Amino acid sequence: MPFVLPNLPYAYSALEPHIDAKTMEIHHDKHHGTYVAKLNAAVESEPSLAGKSLEALLRDASALPEKVRQAVINHGGGHLNHSLFWTLLSPAGGGAPSGAFATAIKAGFGGFDSFKESFSQAAAALFGSGWVWLAKDGEGRLSIVPTPNQETPLSRGLRPLLGIDLWEHAYYLKYQNRRPEYVDAFWKLVDWKRVAELAEGAPLA
Ligand code: MN
Image (cartoon, helix red, strand yellow):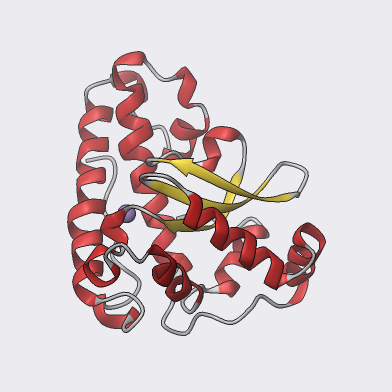
C-alpha cells in the first residue's frame, strides 16, 4: 500500500466542544480512510504512477493517465486535504496569528479581522461540498480560494496554508444545516503556529 492513513495528532475528543468526538472518529477513520484506500487502488492500477509523491501527482493532475485521473484528483486530493486539515487544528488553537505571518495577513487583507470575515463569507457561500483555503502563490501573495469536492490548490499552482472542510460530513452531526456555527467553531481551533510554519515552507503532511 503506497499511501497510509496518518494517525490523528490528538484524541477524537480533543477538539470538543467545537468539533465532537463522533464526528472526528467517522471523519478520520471512515472518510479519510476511504480516500486512502481508493487512492491506493487507483495508483496500483497504473504502474506509471508507482513511487510518485502525492504532491507530485496532484500538482500535475492534468498530465495523469485518463483512466485514473479523476480518482487521483478525488481520493488523492481527499487524502492530502485531510492529512493537512488535522494538523491545522489544535485543542490549544484559536486567537490570531503573530509575527511575520500576521504582517503578511495585514499586507494581503488589511488585517486579521477583514481576512477572517472574507474567509468566513467564502465558507458560507461555497455551494455543495468543498473547501475554502488560504493559499500562497509563487510570489508569496496570499489569497482566499474555494475549491469544489476534494480539489487542492496545489493543482492550481498554489500552496495551501489553511483550509476548512465544508463537506457536511465535517459538521453535520453537531451542527446540521448551521454551517456558519461550524465556521465560528473552526476559528477557535486554528493552530496559527502551524499555519505560519506552512507559509515558511514546512511540509504539508
Ligand atoms: Mn472531510
